[in-house]
Amino acid sequence: MGQKNIAIVGGGPSGLMAAQGLAERGHAITVYDSMPTVARKFLLAGKSGLNITHAEPYAVFAERFGDASPRLRAALDAFTPDEIRQWAADLGTETFVGSSGRVFPEVMKASPLLRAWLKSLEGRGVRTLTRHRWTGFEGNELAFDTPDGKKLVCADATLLALGGASYPRLGSDAGWLPWLQEKGVAVASFQPANSGFDVNWSETFRDRLSGAALKGVTATSAAGTVPGEFVVSRNGIEGSLVYAHAAALRDRLAHGEEADLIVDLTPGRSVARLEKDLGRLDSKTSFSNRLRKGAGLEGVKASLLRELAPAAARMAPPDLAALIKALPIPLLRPRPITEAISSAGGVQWDAIDESYMLKALPGTFVAGEMIDWEAPTGGYLLTACLATGRAAARGIDRWLGEER
Image 1 (tube, one colour):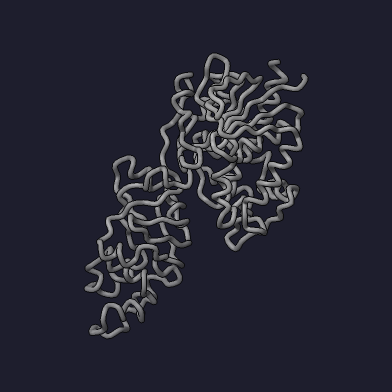
Image 2 (cartoon, rainbow, N blue to C red):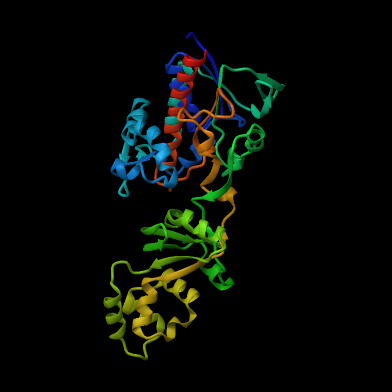
């Protein structure tokens, strides 16, 4: 077949993984990225400990992607969490499994892994051009704005790995959307994923409790019941426990329905036990002491109960116990997509063939968060980005062999 020139637009995890796979197959690869350096979102995610994948049973892991799980399955099967850990180890980054099942580099940083990865790619002849912003198609060529002016690139195949619409300051600004729509590519509207939500807090509560964490709770929505913690923000709530329910809650709000996150403030006690403990206290006991002595609630948990249920102080033990076990937090709207960890929406699956090639644009492939899928935090997002990049590389190599 001979060496082919392949353009990869976007230097995030999907693009870099595709570059690795294609370079291993002997192709000439150029990665174009609009930012001064590549993989900026990857580095940001790794500042507090890069969550690279998850160690739960693979059959469970592979179903974490909602409606997109069946379409992602082949890519995930070909690059499983165990294989991602081995890939990192081959680059000199050993990993460990945290108490929650999340997998982290032992150094708890993304930068050493990225440096080793880029060095490996360079050694395979991969060329990286930064400050090259893709501005669409001109005939069969890709147009870029560069420090030296406009540049047109003609490639034997192209991979677009430009991310979704979250963190636009790091390069994922969805600016590519109209250029694909003009070519007849079906794209679903972007929505925030793994985002916080606005809540109508009182000024007093907002000023006193902003930044406070609620730990050791469970939360319930249409997504199920999940243990964890979340944080009170000035605007509402955010944090890993909220993100686990974000898609279900966002979709309810999008349909004009009310959306409550139901919080159990004492998951270690049953309603019957709470009712009994609260009922033992003298009726003259202050409400603060009733919560502390009868339910073990104080601090931010007690304040949250007071904020959301002002009448709780007058409740009889059965009603108060039930409220403590199922406290509804009424949500107004998701936080803006620019604040979200990731985004839902993007290129629709029907617009892509099994090789990740755009049906409307033969020879142009897509990978990563450009595609319409979402997942909770916990290593799922990065794993799917890496896996789809690898799958797209296989698709490109196969297409070049068949068509050229």
